[in-house]
Length: 449
Image (cartoon, rainbow, N blue to C red; front, side, top):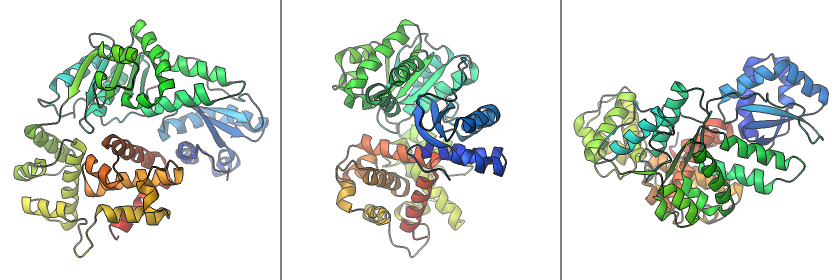
């Protein structure tokens, strides 16, 4: 087995798909010996032990490798090979231009299943107009609002519709965190003979987009060096008549750490805010989610769930999920009394200890053998940051606490930090088997399974 590297969480799902596509001998001889050493834009760079080894993969296994990459759906589009000890690539992905759909879109996010209410009807109409006519009336489109209100759903619905109906357009969807990391790693950290070439390719990748979608742009505030790069990318795309779509948790004027010229560019586009759903819209959302889960929930129960649920739609959905799960486990119909009991109980089986934020924190710190003080503190060490993010995720997943409350429990952190951590672990669980297993193991400890 090849030695583990920093990029195995990307390569492991690809390796697993390759195991399904090639013979056991080919897998053991070649695929297991590849070592992921870098991410170059949208390409994963794999190291081979010899030139002959690289030639065999290039000539015989390249198409299967691309098929595995597509099936793995981990956010890379192709691969490159580098022979151990060499500077250049032994194999480059085909240079001819082709339009590949983004691999990081959630196909469940569509306009059809977005619940429209008074709080979001205008931004919904604008998003639909952009999807039907990119770079038309609403460009750039800037959507802002609190966490969990549907911003990501809407912008991914735009991307999914354009990809399906206008496949010749190059659509790029990226979180601001991913964009910042790529820019810093490629343009400001890399050194060596190929650093300039990689920087040029990354700029070209973003500046040749027909539709550029960046989620949670507020995270660029802390990356001053990246703001300059984004400013030029923004200007070039607008000058070419390309569509730009941005989301944020605040309007441009409140992003005070942004350069003035960027705030001006954002404010010069079409600004739409998503407000928290009113009571009627919450009911409609719950009905839609219950329908998707093929579960009949009485109207009085929906009204009960919508009460005191906060503004976060995900928290609202979490309350519904917990009641549906408890109903199926107990095999009893859903009533208001049962829903109240299910939300008050930490687990669906009687006789178990109540789950509290403290018990979740204790389970995480015990599993990873770290101190509670480190978990709640400001340490940036990887061995602390990952458990802290998992703790955020579990507090959301098991207790359905509001983001603000979880932030207070975890050392007074901002709700946007909690939202980022929750989403980060959700994504890691999808592509990283070890993280997914850790989360399941800790959850089982908490629920005493």
